[in-house]
Length: 115
Length: 112
Image (cartoon, rainbow over all chains, first blue to last red; front, top):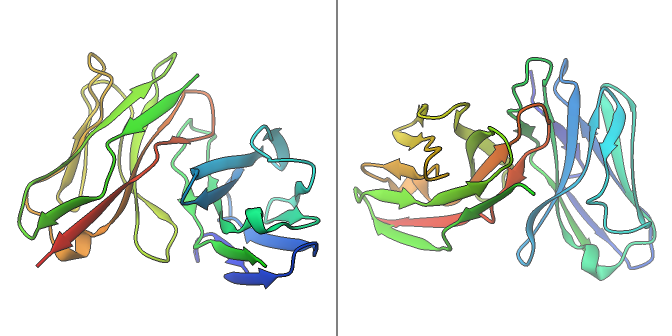
C-alpha cells in the first residue's frame, strides 16, 4: 500500500481565497483524522471520522473550516475564506480501529501558506 | 481530560550518547501509549507503542516502558546516531476511543 496520500504537498494562496486539501487514507482503514501543526500550537486534532461519519469536530477552529468524507477512500478539508493565521502544515492520518488498536498512519502533510 | 506532557527541547547530544526523553500522561482510564517520530519535511511515523501497564515497546534501539504507578512512558536509547535527529512525540489513546492525544514534541539534535 502507498500509505496515506495527501495533495497538494505545498499550497500558497492569497488571503480570502478558498483552499481545499485532499486526503486518501490507507485502503481498509475506517478512521480518518485531520491535524494541524504550527510552531506556536504544536499538533492539534481538527476533526476525525469513523466509517465516514464525523465523530468529533471540536478542534475545528471556526466556521471557515469544513471537512467532508464522501466515501471511505477520500476526504477534504476546506478553508473559506483563508487567512494568514491559517498558515500551517496540515496532516491527514488514518487507522483501523475495529480491534481497538488506534495506531495512526500519517501522510506527508500539506504545507499551506496564506499571504 | 486526557493530556500528555513532554520535556521541552531541544535535546542536544553527541553521537553514541545515552538518550532519555521524559513523558508523563493524565488519563481517566487505561490508555494505550505511543511514541511517534517526525523527520524533517515528513509526517509522523509510529516508533513504538505499549498497550498495558509494564509493557515495554521497542524499535530501532529505542525503548519505553508503560509505568502506571508513575503515569510515565519515557523514551530511551543507549547510543544515539546523527540519523536519530528528529522531533519525538509522545501520545495516548483512551481505550474505546479512536483519537490520539499528542504531547508538544521534543526536538533531538545529535552531532557527530
